[in-house]
Image 1: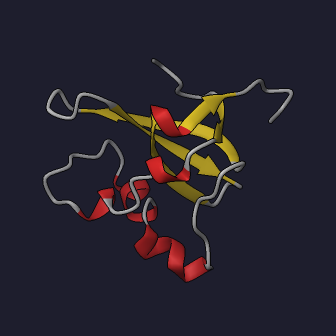
Image 2: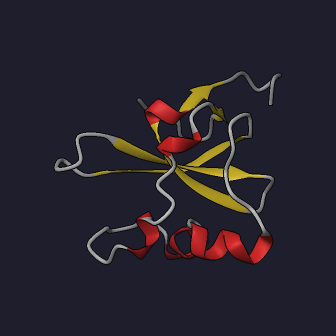
Length: 96
């Protein structure tokens, strides 16, 4: 599913991949997003993703070995959260 540029709501925070950016074997499309997309960065701001947060999908990553896509969600123009599709629902721009 292509959600790039679309608003989404976190519905299952357990689907957050909070340490994905620490795995050297994962190739990221954008180094800046990699640096900002994980709990090692979020702890500097006392932030952790929770159900009900909304944001925009700013990047998508996939790997045939994973069997799923990872969606990078920008929340509050500040936090970047890697999520699986199971953890998010697309919402309308009006709800955003």
